[in-house]
Image (cartoon, rainbow, N blue to C red; front, side, top):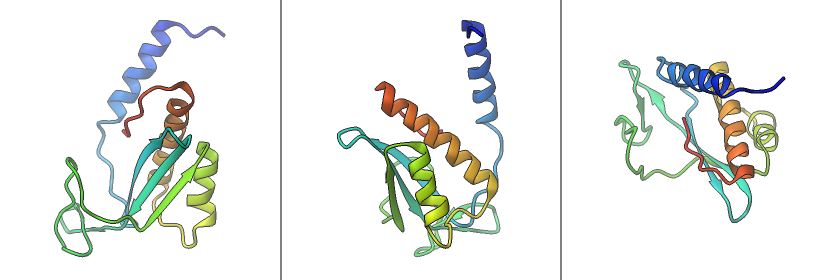
Amino acid sequence: MQITNQAVADATAIDQTLSKRYIDLDPGGYVIIYLDREQGLICAKHFTNFIDDRGLACDPATGKPIPTRGKIERLPTHLYSGRTAKEICIQLFEQTKPCPITMLDHASYLGREFQRAEAALLSGQEYVQD
């Protein structure tokens, strides 16, 4: 089957629409994904948080909401890295006990993001976490 430009445009539109949906935040924390191109690695920093009564992710140390933009001055609880999406997923979901990801939709999202990061790493394209 040949992939057409229209099929690519349709898939992109679906992804962009779905990226705007509401999602519940994982009380187990959040993950920042980035590439280390020099080392050829996909990297992920896990940070703890708690969800307040408004549904906002808050810093356990300060109790203040964690900003969604700008630089955050927090230390991660753990740093994961792998050469492939599968390698980093095994570290995060299978080898870390207890697993810091507590929601299935969050795990699914991270799997998709690790696949995107791997594709960007292999192709030389820019990776920006969704």
